[in-house]
Image (cartoon, rainbow, N blue to C red; front, side):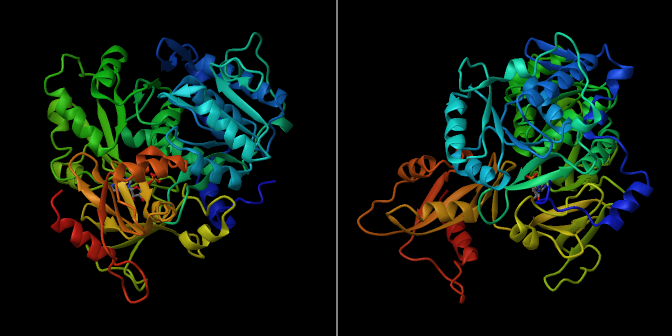
Length: 542
Ligand code: AMP
């Protein structure tokens, strides 16, 4: 049924089971386990709406039943493009429970990316809000459905249309609870969910996270962040991203018996109000946001004393970007370096300043294997910088339905080539020194250069396009598009942005700077010399 899945080598899988790392529970069972011991305690908060751990279990079970009624079956895939709200959590767990993998998709993605995801996953359904952040997701979903014959059903919140199933009802509490029978449930061989990754060459790749491996991640990461039954985790960045979903994030906190507050905005004032109101202990931020929170906290009227740990990751903080956090936010900074494909690294919550502020953490599991290799594939000497390769009990073995991408990113013995350049600090923590892949990291959002270059080159006035990262005080990096114009086109950034947006590209990927050259510098093999472009950019006024 899952013939497009790449599994971890059976011998290694057996080792993880024998060592007790992989357990016998499905992911929904792990996440919902506290409903037995802490059924009356608060599990989820979103605006005025709340669910206890007991109610969450009932809602997931009822949703699973209703999914069956809507002919969603084991082996199906369903695109889930939802904001941080209760429906996202209930639907994700219900789909996972019946073995119909949710493909979690940030709301920022548009037609260009989603069409590609739909072609790979052949989803039978798609879940969207009717509108979100002034964007019409229902119309987007209809267009994706029109172009993809497998897609039959649209689950849409806050809309009354014969063309859609009401998502709020689908995920609501049952009149009478019902249990599914065994044959209707996912097995441990099914993916629990799929995340999306941005690679080097084009639109997102689909990362199937398998039940046993993802369950292990969800059980292991709460302890590393000090998350337990009394913890309150605030999700303000998109919970469809792996970092917010499960490191420990939303699902790990629920599984540990804590409470999750789903926030609509990462803006400091809105988030601070939620921290004060719900006595939030933990939160996950990218460095640029952490810095803005630190700025805003200096003279806020909100009481932030409940905060214990702010996890900072997704990009390496600039020097000075996170050092102020303990003083102004009154909590520990935990650096996290990881990837949707698997490997997660954390600085210890009691680390000294050097490790806490200047390293990106050590692997979450003793069974994580890491290699730091030079360009010829040999291990670098201690302290040297090299490419990071990894495999382990929660790192995937490949991408869904994409053998070429899998062959490019994974070695034959199952190591994932992260594309990151790292060195090993004497403490055992990794330091991310850079990356070998051509990706712009805009405050944690990854923008593959090749994807943008291909699309920009379709503009009739552009003869050649090349993307380089321009330094930016807040986001770390932003996209600078170099173009060689053709014909009588007058290059203007707003027109290029409009052109790309009309092609269905997500807004955060649009270039924020454009430079024009008569011709590009080339390396001998016809490859644009980006080192020369970066030098050119550095010499120009910003
Ligand atoms: P994603 O799969 O979207 O989570 O992106 C994973 C990539 O983000 C990694 O391979 C790194 O390139 C980058 N990344 C994540 N966390 C960090 C960090 N703490 N420091 C530097 N780069 C990071």
